[in-house]
Length: 482
Ligand SMILES: Cc1ncc(COP(=O)(O)O)c(C=O)c1O
Image (cartoon, rainbow, N blue to C red; front, side, top):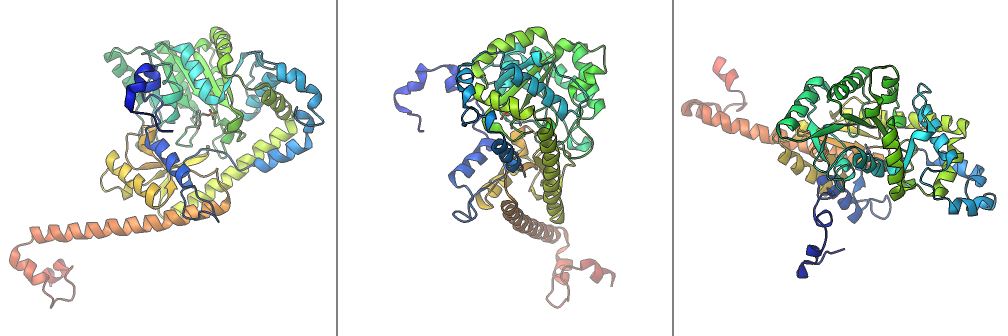
């Protein structure tokens, strides 16, 4: 919808309404808009934009569908389940249905290999992890306060964690030289910078497994984080929304496992965010979870969750689905297998085109290295290349700079939101684009080399080697030594 410019109607609105804190003006969302304007369809729009910018898990809807068909009683909108309709439609308690909280706690344990227990009374609901991030931000920080966050990070955090809460995120710069791992030195440096700018740091926000990297954190990194936040007496928020997408070794280690092994950790500082959007591929159900080890946060968060409850109909259905142990085990196993197969296929095809991705074991995307295609290693050149990919090649990939990555030339490519045929079309487009770019780059290099040679050679010598009588005008050294 067009916003009217005349009449200054925006002057009547709040700063939040008129500001751009939503973060929609970024290449991340621009790519989505390009897709929305011209979406690919194999028969009706084969030249449209292919959506490689959406981290959705669409590889197992068949399993879900079978379960729904076989369990009609789980839904209040079927002949078998309608007897529960009245009670469920009336339910609005912000504590949530007890059966739902128990099922979620059990599912979180299962995703973590049964190694940690979760207390259903600490489960706080929200509208997706999006709502969970805002809820935890409201609980832990005041306007102007900051959380430190390793880069690259999910662009939605600028909206979810900061927009309405007015909390800020300050980068902990991570580098490709150590596969973007968080180090103690980088944590200290970000903290010091905030202190020097007189900004109060309230905590650290991490995503494990990482979006956009697709890597899960090792124990040492998690321990480093826990000791850092304990020393500084600040919070640690771990977004573990991708915990159930780990498809390869090393296995997932969550923050709960680490603090259970560490009796010295102040648990009041530890908070977990989760959702069913990625693990189960149910982003439309808007099921988000805050799991805090801090009683005050649980109590306040629960009251705040009134603003973003999960509908009781959804709670009812999921309580039933997630309590089916045999089904959830099979679903997680099958999802892991399909993700692994897709990841292997996608990465190996890119490798054939000499495109490297960061080694990863989780998530719904890969972190593709196109640094060799940049004319210069700058963010401007990255965006220039990205525009070609979106507008000419018609692939919506997301540039690293939209994830606040400091190093130019990285792109996130989602591989689990499409069928095999669409992936083939996307790979073919990537191939012809890369070959064209490589050829153009080497042609430009050759021209630069020839121009440089002309400038550096003595005039007479140049005339001699460039003479049409010589077999190879590009071999001055052969001629000279002969
Ligand atoms: C790291 C991370 N956190 C939170 C979200 C938001 O998830 P939800 O759909 O549950 O709101 C996303 C979505 O991509 C994400 O990648």
